[in-house]
Length: 160
Image (cartoon, rainbow, N blue to C red; front, side, top):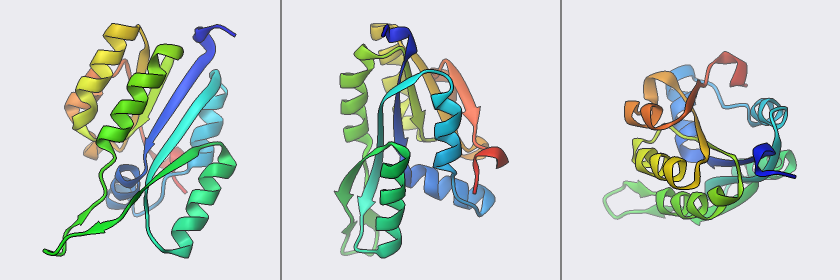
């Protein structure tokens, strides 16, 4: 199979969870997303980046992602002494995109985080890869939208 058909998906689970909840009070429909993208080519890599919490609902959600076809990478939930929390996958996502992008034709990022704009510009120019972003319209950084070849707003058809 040529690279032309190969797609890699990178899902920033925390970002998608919080932005869809804030904007719509609803959850992202990963299954509907998967069905949409799988009809456009061969998904050769799909990684969901999540935070490990000792919580049955989280485990069920992660199992559902695996059942759909995602590999789930977990990072421990860290509660700081000031009460704030840390659970940031930006570097891990960046490393995986840099490694996998050279072997695919399309990179799809599920995130509204503007920190990924330079990453998308780099893989597009250095690997001649098409970059796409799925994000909540009001909560996706303009710089990220501008860095991607295609932007797909998360709207009702991709929500539970």
